[in-house]
Image (tube, one colour):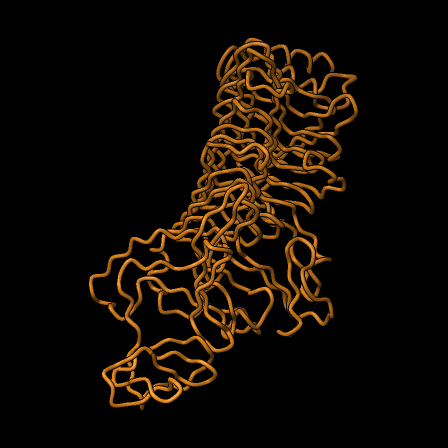
Length: 554
């Protein structure tokens, strides 16, 4: 039996291109796992495909180094009913302190065309384990790596690419992840982002990625896609799911993934047609200290968690930012809970969290056609956002620190007459370019509605820099409904300058309204100054001033 196995394996050496089959590369005594058999199969082919047997589990205990122009191919994937596709060809990796990566590409020269497809890769332990690791140093280049129909399960990192030097001289480029599934385990250590498990981890600024039609199950406290340093990247049709949420449980006790996409240093990044739920952050861009000029585009995504942008320029087009809400829970906790959740005791003790995405420090966001939660209020939450704190539904990106947002008003064109349009964030800018064919002439071109009974600025004009922060405001007084003009620039520089005549409301002496306070000014068309300057009739017109609860004319 030993001689037969040896002859079979040697016969495979003669294949220089095309296909070799693992059925011809068996274990040789005294081997107790399949590591060496797979190595022999890879060595037997100069360029081509190593085909793994159907319905077989390969036991691997050491790292297998890959060469260029080699494809590892399993049989067609199926669905086992567990919620994640699994391949009949499965490689089971048992990592240890010496061998932490299942497959590794450690380039000291140019390499290209490495493919893994139709395989299941599973780790018996998530401790420091990696499904596929690519490393390199200055001058090296790995180009054209493809993962297609691969399931990664149980690894600390499913795919890891890192130059290990903190420079941009190593190139790991044209990487494609297609139709793959990642099952990311729970992170038991998460003091830093690097300590968290992740499906994909990239730490190289000379690395381009395309991730498409891929599903990631994000374990508690774990990460889906983590670009610590990255270059141009396209993420299309990514589905990220955190742990299933438990009904009748307060959010602080829920097991949620940390983030679907975490980005620090980045190049051109596009995320489109993607869905995320069950994580704290759907997208988190965290590079406030080193703002990047390369743009980030978010297009036609459905986000159910928080989106936080810091240190980046983002164009957000047609995204759905939705709230998450549990079923009823008979608790007494109030206020903001963990991970951005809110507890509202006034609406059947349900919890929810604000869906407003945030433009944080050194961030600039342009929002076009975005929607912010559903068109109707959730069950047991009033349609009036002022009745809950904070409001369950936002109508714009929020800002923090020196973040700024520009909104294309076209997205509000059909809601200008809605009393639920709240634009109440500082540093949110609205360039107005609105044309109307005349079909809706009853609608205002621009409408800002305040909460019922609230006193809040409707419009603020001014300037600020490192020394000054001056502004004028137009606001509605919540007590009497008056429109008020206010400014915070004191001294002789406070005032209002009109460069033309100002027309006051006109009354007759009999129609002058009851003064609501001293200082009101009106024109009385038939008034004259009477006894003690009181307004009397039969005159030719005079200015009327409220003083001491009465009108006086001068």
